[in-house]
Amino acid sequence: MTNHQSKDDTSTALTMAAPAMAGLFLFVALPFALAVVLSFTNLRLGSPLPMKWVGFEQYRRIFSDPTFFHALLNNGLFALVIVPVQTALALGLALLLNRPLKAMAVFRTLFFMPVVFPMSLVAVVWTLVYAPNANGLMNAFLKFVTLGLWTPKDFLHDPMLALPSIILLSLWQGMGFQMVIILAGLQSIPSVLYEAAAIDGSNKWNQFFHVTLPQLRNTLIFVMLVTSVLAFRLFDQVEIMTQGGPNDATTTVMYEAVKIAFEQQKMAKGAAMTVVFFLIVLTITIVQRLLIKEERAFE
Image 1 (cartoon, rainbow, N blue to C red):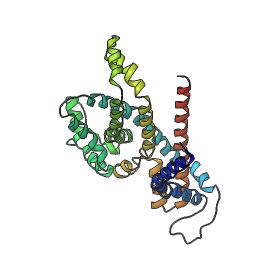
Image 2: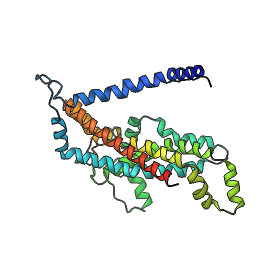
Image 3: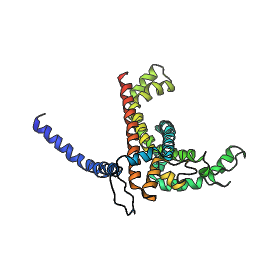
Image 4: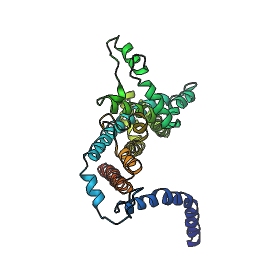
């Protein structure tokens, strides 16, 4: 390849990537840079006082606020459950749907449909599902399963049940996204590997552990990384279903940041909370990537 051809390829690649790079700059990099600048000020909407530079004062307030740590703990618990459980369920669902059966495309579409629906709509519907009376769908279902032993619960107003209820909703709504990605990974595995394993006498379980999982390694890593980021962005369900309650049982960092910035109009403190949260998620992502590289080094 000549230098002229190499320059042409580079310019073509840059031209094609320009719209995406412009979008990242306008909607990610620029807002984050603005949030960093605002976090060092005392900006408050509607305040007659002029904005001034206060240094790390907003960060000091955040780290002395127990509500922030409680919200961060809720985010951690949510991600700790969502990431492994949703990935495992999506993997099982993808395995079931990766079969050459009639109407299988219809079933794939049905399982993917919750991802297409707006989270606001899903949250409203599940609020009705969690209705506290005996006729609520969840209460009625659990009463049927337990043969009448279940007593109706107010899921979204019970401090012990509110967060698990949101986790269950999120598992159902997001599982289809992971399923599609894993399904694509399953369909890219060469069939000759299974044929060779069958010739060697491997049963289905051995084929799953020694052929399917190793071949899906990169796909599962990608799914878990994306799910981790999405899990820490928990907001819509909390805003619509519980408003952070009861007793801050479902409050999250995103919810707290929005409430502080737009309800209490403390833009600087909300910006500082957003910056801290971004750095925490970035650190978790980097650690995951480093652990993955170390595993590859030992292979």
